[in-house]
Amino acid sequence: IAKGLVPEIKIVMFGWERNWSGAHASTIPSVITGGKPEDLSKQINELVDEVVEELKLFSAALRKFRPDVKISLGNTNVNWITPLLQRGIKAGVHFDYFGTEEGLFAQSPERPSNAYGNISWWARSVCEHFGFFDVPLFHSESVYFSTGPGFARISARNQAGWYVRTYL
Image 1 (cartoon, rainbow, N blue to C red):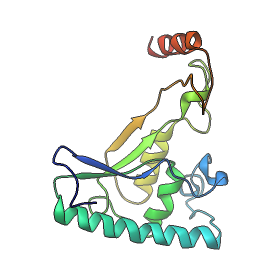
Image 2 (cartoon, rainbow, N blue to C red; image 1 turned 135 degrees about the horizontal axis):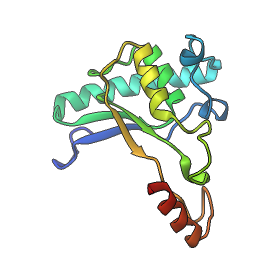
Image 3 (cartoon, rainbow, N blue to C red; image 1 turned 120 degrees about the horizontal axis):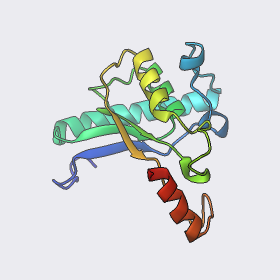
């Protein structure tokens, strides 16, 4: 992959919209609430170990063949990244940006943030917990109101209204 990237690519994302389980997808990471490691099953811990090795190999290859390309660790759930950091994944070595998104697609602009809101704060807190005080956040998704199949089905008229109210 690292050898085959076209010259125009400047950022590569590792871990797009991932989570370890539904139970971990929308909870505040334990390192924020109590300073404790995430409580993961044996099966998930084994999977985390595999992903850590994949990221180490990928980042080493990318640094060797395309040192100009930056790595965004996710556009994903903060709880997916936390166990990677617990296993020694380091900013500047294995990633350059902490990738985030806020899945605000299912709520109107006036609704207070739910568990999916405040992702940037969560990400910053997790980074600081692991001693990464200057890691840039790469926020790639936030406000998108789907009218098609999938996440939230709202009418085109409601979609237009939600966008207007969001940006006013």
